[in-house]
Length: 391
Image 1 (cartoon, rainbow, N blue to C red):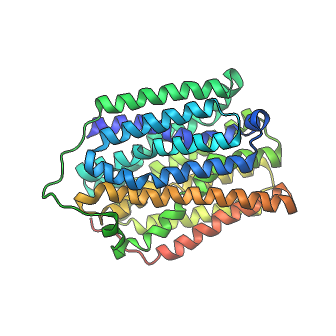
Image 2 (cartoon, helix red, strand yellow):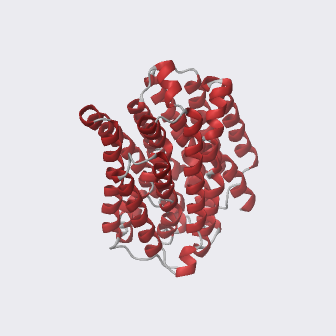
Image 3 (tube, helix red, strand yellow):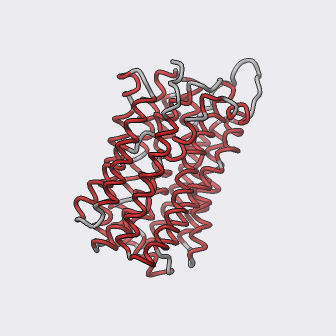
C-alpha cells in the first residue's frame, strides 16, 4: 500500500497544479486570447464540475477494475489531452473545453489513494494518512504559483502547457506500469450509490462537504490573482508570490488537521471549529478587502489554512462505508466536495460581473468573499446535526 500511495501522491501534484494555475495566467490570457476574469471563473468552475461529475463512473470503476487501470486511463486521455488542447487554445471556449478534460482526467487520483486507504488501512489511520497524501500532493499548488508565473514570463504559457501535457502523459504511464490493485473484498457483495445515499448519518455531512472546500479552492485557484491585481495593481510575479503564500498556508492547514481527530477523539468538532474560523476569515476579507495588499494576502492565507478540512471530512464519512462500497463512498463524497467548488466558481463569476458592473471592482470582490463566508456558515449550521463515525 505504501508504494502505491507514494506514487499517487506524486501524481496528485499534477491535479493540485491544474486546479490552481489559472490564478497567475489572467493577464497573459486576457492579452493573447481575450479571456477575462469572468471567463476564467467559468473555466475554473467547469474544471471542478467535470472533476466532480466524473466521480460517479470512477467510483464504479474503482470497485470493478481497481485504481491502476482507472487512474492511468483517465489521466492519459483527459489530463494529457486537455493540457495539450489548452496549449493551442485560441478562444475562451477552447480553454473551457480543455479545463473540463483536465478536470475529468485528474478526477481519479486522490480518490484512488483514498480507496487504497479505505480498503487496506484502518479508520483510525485514515484522517492522518489522507491529510499527509493531500499535503504532499499540494506541492503542485505551490508549483502553480510563483514557479508557473516564472515559466510564463520565461518560455510563455503555451510552451509551459505543452511540457505539462508531456509530464502528465508520463505520469499516466507510470501509474499503469507500477501501481498495484488491492485484492477484491470477500463475500462478493454488490451495492450502489443509492445504498450510500440512504444512510441517514451522511445527510447532515453532505452539505458541509459541498461547501467546505469552496472558499479555499476558489480563492487560491482563481480569485486571489484578479483581486490583488484589480484592487492593488500587483504584477504577475507578485501575484505568484501571493499565491505561493496561500498555497503554503493550505498545506500547513492540511497537515495540522490530520492528527487532530485522534488527539481530541472527534471528527465533528475539529471540522466544525475549523470551518467557523474559515468563514470568519472570508467575512473579514469581505469587510477589509480594500485596506491593503498585505492584509488581503494574510486573510487569503487564513482562508487556506482553516479551510483545509477536506480530508478529515472524508475520514468522518469513511467510518460509515462498508468495504464493498469503499470506492463509491469516497468518490461520492469527493463529488460533493469538488462539485461544490465548481458550483461556487460558476456563481462567483456571475457575482463578480454583476456587482462590478454596478459598483466597481472593490465592491465585487467584497461580495465574492462574503458569499463564500455565508455559504460556509450555512453548511456549519446543518453539520451541527451530524454524529461522529464509529472508530
